[in-house]
Length: 272
Image (spheres, rainbow, N blue to C red):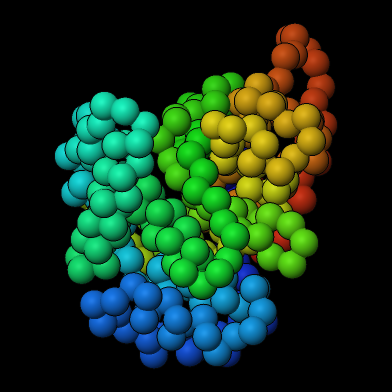
């Protein structure tokens, strides 16, 4: 099933964080990640607003590096990182490489998903917040219904109060247009609050972690994820398939199928 509504408008409120977001817009990077993080988070005593300040700063100031994506990921190549021969040497080299990589992101204000997620975790570490760097599968195209999609994305989980919550700074920051060959053309900044502390069941519509524990859902498997319908990215926050339970329907000629769909907004057309 491919669910593609044409919306007249949709809007998610961010009123609860308007004061934090307004403050974040006044903070600039001045060659020190430690200073940047402390300036963003020190005004807030609670974990929630600290995490929001970090997340919002990243999504407002870092653009998706589509040229880097086209150079490596589009061509199926692995980007250059570091090489090591033993575990002890590997950890030391990873720390050095990660510091240089994050520094480059901040200077250029560009990153791919790996960079967004690494930067978020590093800033959380500096702010005293527990967080995780997660890699996994994503669904980005209608033809991926029935499969897990591609294992080429990274996002985060952050501990707030008494549990972990999921977020994706890359997809929250905006998106890229494509040509007919699916090569990325340019980045369009378009903040989407859907990917800020997204409930696990909603996040699972198009994300599945390589380590299944980070789905934060009991007994949710890769096969379960593969049967999800495809949700158009601009409408995913408004749309939910209730029945059938799966995005794959096994039917015979003459069968009748009843669709129950929840839609939180106004729309002109609904295509199934």
